[in-house]
Length: 232
Image (cartoon, rainbow, N blue to C red; front, side, top):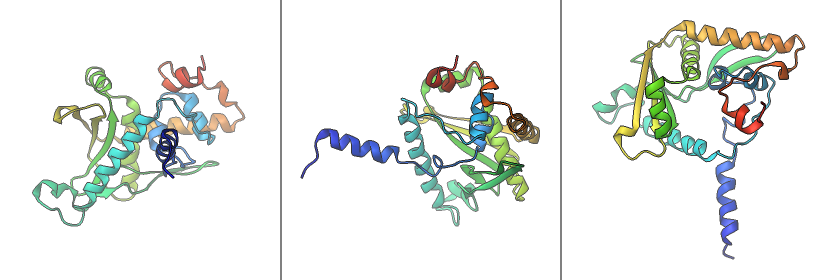
């Protein structure tokens, strides 16, 4: 029997909202450790999941773009189809690494998007909007992204994979051509990873000492605290 329009929509919503492997991750990962909001980091350390935002679709589109890039890169890791893809030979794609272990919490792991092992170069794909991209170009990229990638490089180093350069690849979901992809790069600095990790340990110790997570402050610019929790 054919489905009603409402049934078709519900089917599509169920498929799009079916939890991914990343959604099921219980321990905090590199993408969250650098969050400037102490409260949100504290909640994740305690294993609390964020409430679903009304604006969830952009994230799922981003997951689709990641999957497409992953599928294309995998074609060239053994032998590049042509010279343009030579950097992908021997690359690591979405492979889990260990960041470190925190007493009482466990071993934290994460998955860098793309590691060009031969070139000592780490790439991470970020989907965004043209409005946000214009802001990043003007004001700089969020430090949360810098800490995230630095932690990846730090973890890779522990496995003997040296990283010298890091690149964020911004892809506009509402883009229309080549100019809507922008690359932001910098040289890896281990000090950034250590700074992020030390802060994480301090927040964890605060919680382990018996302090309530509600005593942690929200960052003034935290979108989640302001718009979903309305914590203010």
